Length: 201
Image (tube, rainbow, N blue to C red; front, side, top):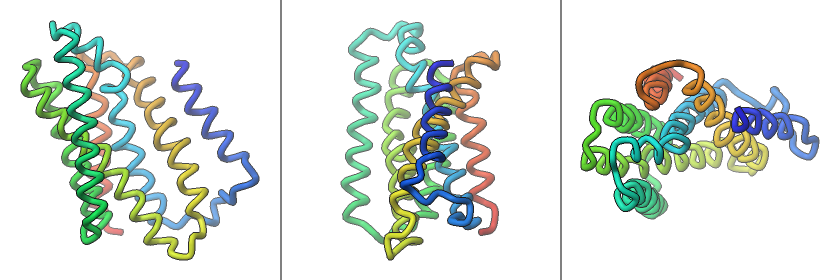
């Protein structure tokens, strides 16, 4: 509940901040489309961030294995950032689609198996589920705003709503809905993101 309230509070502060021009007139349908997909993809990480360590401990993994699961994700993320920073040919649309599919595979694997190697390998997808989605958002904002208009407020919304509120809402949902796995909601929101990906822009 605390994380949920934090996300709501951060979002309200952003919307009330008069330094940034964050009126609805700034938004076009394509903005809402991209924001929604990234919101869902990043929010899907809540099960891993919040419940991952105790879940893995419950599976009998020792601290070394649990640490390895988190560390390999960070290494993969760095690798994706480095690779995509030198390759500007991949569109944000393609990155969003790849990140969405990877999200379904990653969280689906967490539900399907409690084998360490499968979970470890699926953790490598963090580079795509987080890193590729993040870069897709950055490329979209820069591509849509070459003059720099709306970039500052876009990233402020990204930090407050996508990186805070989305995680808070999914965490609250996981706590409130009695599914057998912490990763069921993440799979569901990832599937919703995939559906949005297929909607004609």
